[in-house]
Image (cartoon, rainbow, N blue to C red; front, side, top):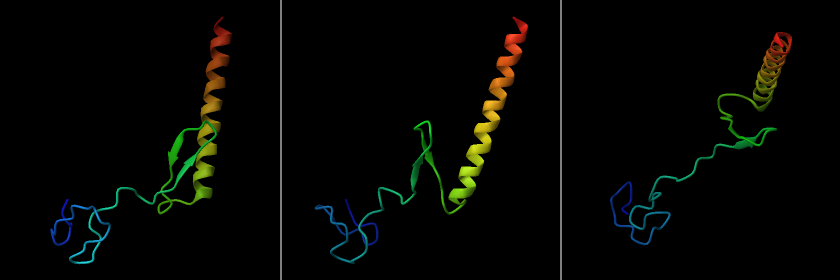
Length: 81
């Protein structure tokens, strides 16, 4: 692998280039924080675009809507029988 700045060979995979001193390669991981919700599914929250409180509020509203629709569907099915 070569340095992404000066193309100097980096065969030993050093973090910083021995020639130019810059970071030799792009980061392999992001600094995005990952949270888990109540059903243990991984949810990616990009904190630069929303706050944790706003995300929690939206998630709660979405869950209430989903539950409400589920109960409406079950009541409709029960009334048909």
